[in-house]
Amino acid sequence: MTSREAPNRRRTSARPAPRFHLNAGRLLAHIPVHRFPGHALACRLYLEGGIGSVELGSLYLGREDENGEPVTAAPYELVRLALPRRTYRVGQVLAAAVKDKERIPGYRLVEQPPLLRHFRSRLEPVRA
Image (cartoon, rainbow, N blue to C red; front, side, top):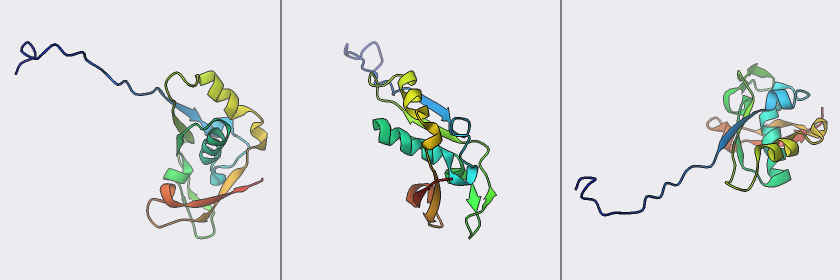
């Protein structure tokens, strides 16, 4: 069946929600890289507004030795947001993210599996 022979159906295009990247390394400059600023920002956004996000930084790409000291850092500390349509505006998200940003703690690894550590690790907050 060609497009001309196809029945006249209403096309519904489910456009994906807008995606934004926040530079957590810049927003939370008081948190060192080995304390995972991207993860800290993702936790803050979820606790403040229920905003789901994913950390694309040192927890995902970095490596530590057995003492928890950074061996390889990520080249960036980003947080990717997938905002629900018509629910949030970028300004609202940024306002929630930077509100009292000096009080946002870093995190340290408590447990990490050998594979997929960014999905299955346990972290706990650490005050610097």
